[in-house]
Amino acid sequence: MATTTAKTAQDVLKADFQTLVRDTEKLLEHTATLAGDQADELRAQINESLARARETLQQTSETARERGREAVVAAEDYVQTNPWQSIGIAAGAGFLLGLLATRR
Image (cartoon, rainbow, N blue to C red; front, side):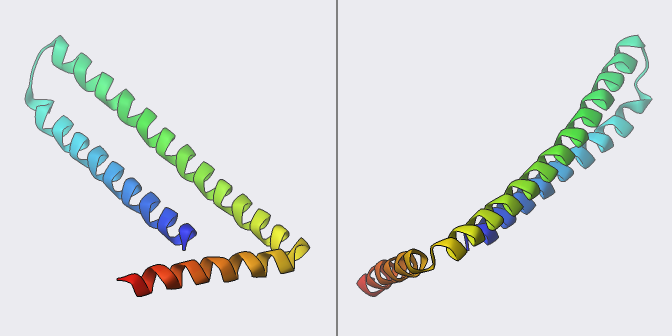
């Protein structure tokens, strides 16, 4: 469940960031009609920032994916080496969730 929530949050963040990048690109296209050295310099700076943002997004996405895989492997290893403790933890968590659900 936590993995699903993290994945959903990551997908939303990624979609929002991609929308921001697309909107910025549209802004650049619309300002292309502006003349002058300052406008050209501003467009160049925005393009550089967009390139860095894309690279950062890609690296962040890869890092999050790798950390997720590592967490799954660690959880699987723990469950395999401590099966009874894992069952006890799961039962306790289920009991608490059941109590919370019936209180409403």
